[in-house]
Length: 109
Image (cartoon, rainbow, N blue to C red):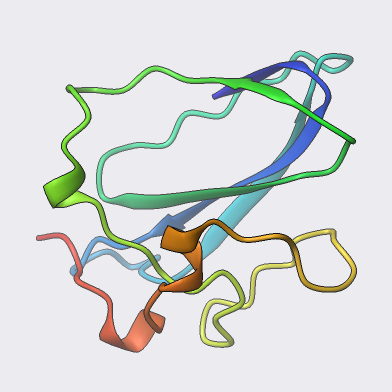
């Protein structure tokens, strides 16, 4: 993941069933200024919040987009406890509004 314009806070959450870090998250700010990138490995959830007025966010994937395999965890799940670096409630997509609790999420083998 990388941002070519603007700034986002980008997060990855471990969803690997047998992982010692299951349910733990990492996050970092990606911006046009810092030019940082984040690699999200298979078995991790990915989410982000735009911190600037707008942002152009680019990423590569390991395969073609397959919406039938997409899942969504609620953005503010208390069991995960992501610090989004954001005050208030963000504007959510329809998909993100229907996110499930981490305890009910489908995990990866």
